[in-house]
Each structure stands twice: as C-alpha cells, then as structure tokens.
Image (cartoon, rainbow, N blue to C red):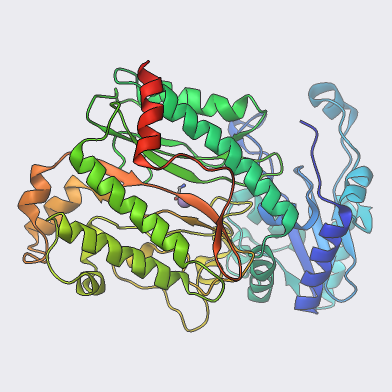
Amino acid sequence: MKQRFFEPSLYHTRRNKLAQALQDGLIVFPSNEAAGMNYRDNTYPYRQDSSFLYFCGIDRPGLFLFIDSQSGESILAGDESTMDDVVWTGPVESLHELSEHAGLDRVITLAEAKNWISNLIERNIRIHYLPVYRGDQAFRLAALLDTGAEAISGNASIPLIEAVVSLREIKEEPEIKELSDAINISRQMHITMMKSACAGMTEAEVMARVRAECLKHDLDIAYPIILTVNGQTLHNHAYHNILEHGQLLLGDFGSESSMHYAGDITRTIPVSRHFTPLQKDIYSLVLQTLSSSTAAIREGIRYLDVHLQAARIIAGGLKDLGFLNGNPDDLVAEGVHALFFPHGLGHALGLDVHDMENLGEKYTGYESGLERSTQFGLRSLRMAKTLKAGMVLTVEPGIYFIPELVALWKKNHSYPGLVNYDRIERNLPFGGIRIEDNVLVTPDRAQVLGDPIPKEIADIEQYRELAYS
Ligand code: GLY
Ligand code: MN
C-alpha cells in the first residue's frame, strides 16, 4: 500500500507548536529501524515510531527528524535508497519527495547530520529527545550524539515529553477519521467472531478468521489479538483451547488504520447460542458499568473519578449477586472490588493502542497533584487525569473470576467478612467479561467512535444464532 499523508500544513503546524513550546535547543526524533527476527534481513513487521509519524508522517527506517526550536526549521536526515535496495525491495519515493509530503524545510545526509550535531554539542546547544523504548533508537541516538546507549536512556527531555503529550493527546479531525476507520474494521472483526465461533473450534481457528478481516483490507492488527475462553487472564495470547458449550469467549482486538491509528475493542460472547443465567447477570452488570461510565465522561471530569464510580457500580452489583458483602463505597475504598476488577477503566488511544505509554504514564495519564495509587487494582489505572475535549479514550470495565487470585486471598484471610469465597468457588471456572468501546471526549459528553458494535445481550444472541445456523 502506498504510504498516505495528512496535508503538509498539518505537520508544519504541529512542529511549529512544538518548537514554540520548547523555545531552546534542537529536538531530535529518530525513526524506528527494521528489526531482524533471527537474522538481519528476516525482519519483524516494520512499525514506525508514533511521535516520528505524528510530526512528519514518514513511514520509513534510517531517518532522523530535527526541529530547531528557535527558528522552527525542520530537517529530514537520511540517505537515499541505492540501486541494490531498488533491485531487492523495489523503487520508493525519494527523501525529497517524502519531505514535501511532510512540509519539511530540507533534507541532509546522515554524515552531514553527524557533523552538524557534533558542532551543536561543542557549542553546548541542548539536544532534546524522547524516552527510548527500543535498542535501535538508543544505539542510533548514542552514535549521533557521540555518547553511550546507557547515557541516552536516562536523559530524555522532560519539557519535550510534556510538549509532545499536550499536542498528541488532543486529536485533530483527520485523526478522529483515522481512528473511526480503524474502529470500523475492528467492528467487522468482532462481528466475524460473533458470527463464526462455534463449540468444537479452537480459539486459533476463530482468531484466524478475525485477523483475516483486517488482512483482506491490506491492514493488520494494532496489538496481539486476545481471543480466549480464559478471559480472566487479562492479556492472554494463547489460542490452543477448544471452545466448549457453556463457556464465555472474550475477544479484545482491533485493527490499525493505514496511517497507524489503533482500534481497541472488546466484546464477550457465549460459546453457546445463549448466555447462562449467571453469565447474563454478570454481563448486564459490566454493560451497565460501561453505559454509566460513558455517560459520566465529559471535559473537566477526572478519569480517576469515572473509574471509581465504575468500581462502585461493580462492587454494588457483586454484592447484590451475593459475591461481596458491605457498602460499595467501603469495598472500593478498601480495594476489595479489585478481586474481580483488577485493572483500570481505560487508557488513551491514538497512534498507539496505549497512546504515548512510552513517554511515561505519569505524563500521559496523570497530572500534577495526582499521584498513581499503590493499591492493587487502582495502581493499574493508566488514565486518571482531568479530561479535555479532543482526547480519545477506551472505556473497558470488566469482571473476572481469577481462580489463583481467589485462592490466594482466601488463604491469606483477606477481607473474610466482605468476600463470599464459597459462593465464588462454587461458580469456578467462570472466565471473564470485558466490554470495551472507544470514545471521543467533547465539552459535554463522550461520543462513541465508529459504527455501533453489538453489545446488548439480545443482539449478541442473534449473531450467535447465525453461527450455529
Ligand atoms: N487492548 C489491550 C489493553 O487495553 O490492554
Ligand atoms: Mn484497551
């Protein structure tokens, strides 16, 4: 697929805003390199760094993007492809053509970049770069800046992190369109799961059909597919189980748009045509938590408070169903609900499925005066800060019956009066239920992105009929 770009003026404006926010020094974004799986030329699928994409959109390895924060001048550094590259991997657009798509000012070679940077370092010009998360970034930056890879890891620029987060966290109109496209392909993947999963199939067979839905659009997944009858394991990437009647099947997957924006959707369905009565009760509780949380989202509210509200709804519902005792407010204050809901309500979504997690959740999900909790469950909340219009988030409550965790809490006599261990044990194995939508924060509400994806019990059961007909 030929690489797509937004309008050059969009990248230009982003870079100007970044330069204005920093006001001193040179900003450096290294591209990601192709990474060999077992030898150099047999590579993992290539994925460009998301901040590199954000500020110039160029989807190619071997480059640096420089932004002079005083003049705003933006420079692409790289070497043109050789005839050998053309012979083995085909003709590509020149760096000059790419730099025009990105509205950049000029192109220099890597050797020129090295000389130029040495000169700036001699003149004590500050060099800003983001935290590195891949060895290739650390080594390329270290070579450019004439230092060691270890020195690179500890010296990321906090002002650059803060400036990049404040730009990337507010999605622009063309980005919302890309996200919606990714979510709509993710929707087709989920409908495929609902229409095709049958008892007797393996998880892998269903997963292959689901993945084919994005592959046939010349797209792929935004993160490893979770498709499992063991939904109580939050990030389960094994697919060997055979689906059995009476089980739940949890699917958490989404496609990446051609410009690398992620969809992140979860649905949970019965392997049989219908949910059992207990599955229906727990599913309804998760769905009610999702609706109430979505209804609470708007500019100005802290996502921490939406999360705590979700936790109280879950605790209250589990009390009504006889799994917990006590007042929901107290159960949540003590962290008892985390036996069933051990993760956060959601996270930022954008170019990354956990958007900008590489920049540090302290910056992407928290704010000054808001420290991350150390309590089990609440400490896994990635997004807690005050919401702004233009943010895109996931809303993904869940209830899980994790046998190992239940056994540990019981053995440790954790909250004996508040947790009905016998009732929980009588209902094991249960699995897990999570329902996840992706929303845009607006001044007065949350807008669920993409076309509706079935989540009401009656709608899901209709699709399940199709699977068996
Ligand atoms: N989609 C996986 C997660 O949000 O962690
Ligand atoms: Mn998610």
